Amino acid sequence: MEKTSAKQSPEQQFEQHLPFWPHLTADQRALLVSGTSCRSFRAGENVHGRTGDCTGILLVLSGELRSYFL
Image (cartoon, rainbow, N blue to C red; front, side, top):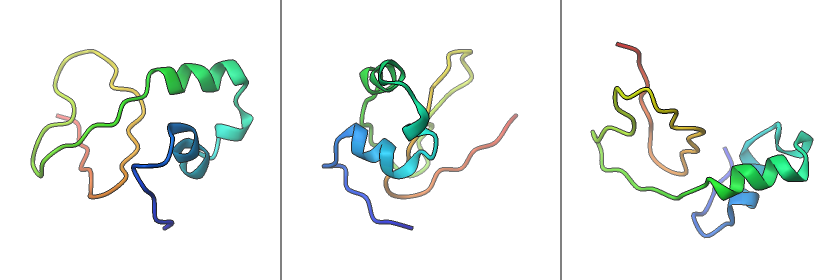
């Protein structure tokens, strides 16, 4: 796995980790970047709850993420 840095721009992160990124149009890329935010979570903290809202794409830069359905 390649090492990443939170100092990279969202575009650099997406280009490095999302295989479909080069196939998107400029408008599609701009839409993804405009909704991007960098967040930090502590171990054991919930990233997404039971709401019906879509969280979107989660790009984990360090640590681990456990996902499951209830």
